[in-house]
Image 1 (tube, rainbow, N blue to C red):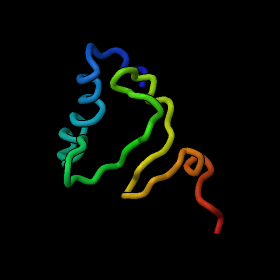
Image 2 (tube, one colour):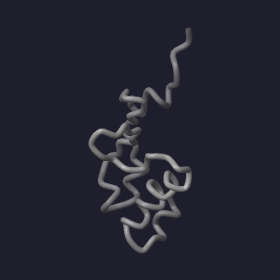
Image 3 (tube, one colour):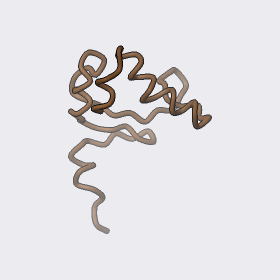
Image 4 (cartoon, one colour):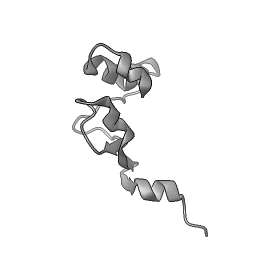
Length: 79
């Protein structure tokens, strides 16, 4: 995330971290829109206002399921 602080605008850092890599890999990914699937990181704060909010992760949505940060840190239950 430190690199994202160096961009002149929040929009340019967002594109660099999301849309541009997806386009380079020829993926239909990197943006949120109706009808698209999305994996997301849920943070405490608004990273559009302060990129440092990206360090305050509360959970993740992956493959349609929500995981709290506590569950992710704990890892899978032993079987």
